[in-house]
Image (cartoon, rainbow, N blue to C red; front, side):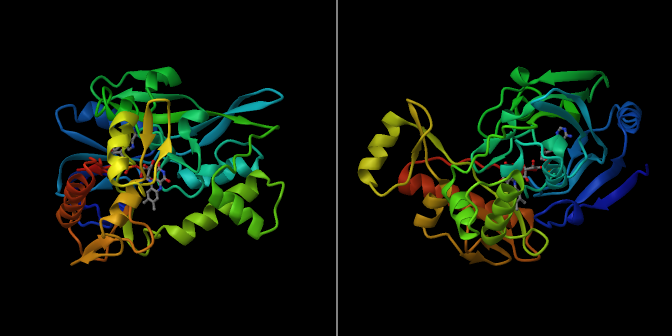
Length: 337
Ligand SMILES: Cc1cc2nc3c(=O)[nH]c(=O)nc-3n(C[C@H](O)[C@H](O)[C@H](O)COP(=O)(O)OP(=O)(O)OC[C@H]3O[C@@H](n4cnc5c(N)ncnc54)[C@H](O)[C@@H]3O)c2cc1C
């Protein structure tokens, strides 16, 4: 465990933005994490996982603590289910592949999402009809102020669409150190409800998919649609899909009858932000060192030397245009630092 000053975070954020941490330390155990928090009580702190959900617009004037706690194990099981605990610093995709190799079901639709296991509850990650809240049991977290351990059960996490207590009341107060998931051992609930998955499986003549088949299909779809951050800096979907009251949406829909949407409850609809951005003419556009991906309008990209501020300016331009064109406010999913 070595404290470093004025540390470049370029390789620690998937946008590949050059920004410095005033101080940086990687912790490899809960004991190390406790020590760092205790010894630096007065310092401002910033918790860093895989850096795949953040846009750094400036240097971080804080002690950046990189969570590198490793380990995963089965903590309980019965005939049907298994309870698996993973330390926060495990790579999410590797963890998902490990569960599939054991024939444990529940995470396969979230294959290839970047980042760490410990960050998955923060925005209740999700993809292809599944969210972390569907298999999440609890997580352990350390209080940043007094280093006490707190267990958050699912109900206390207030999970919503890309939302949780860790983005609200508990923000900047806790470091998640481990997460427990409840996965199926048999009678897996294979979810191929997303058309893309069905089509990908059909392409390979698979009619009764295994967990591995679903995971492979998701990986293939994601690789064909989303830029690999190692080749083109990005942070996945930059914006959340806006949720509107049906009564508000109906007025907008009259004006734009071609607008895509899907019902999420009796009173609300979700509008695909990517569709709005594409309609507003941003898809594939480049502005200097940054731009909007050519295949996926939700993804902003760094062509090499963009600053976080340049990308932030593009995101603001998009938000203003969507508001003035459609009267819809779209919010960033990515944490703007
Ligand atoms: C190509 C690409 C595709 C993506 N696809 C998806 C997708 O399909 N679905 C989806 O939901 N997301 C997606 N994402 C977003 C991202 O992968 C997830 O949000 C991921 O969970 C972020 O994990 P991380 O460890 O990289 O978080 P970081 O970026 O390191 O941190 C994100 C936030 O969480 C805080 N944080 C980090 N670790 C902890 C901790 N241990 N305790 C408390 N707070 C912490 C940080 O301070 C920060 O505010 C994608 C990103 C990329 C680059």
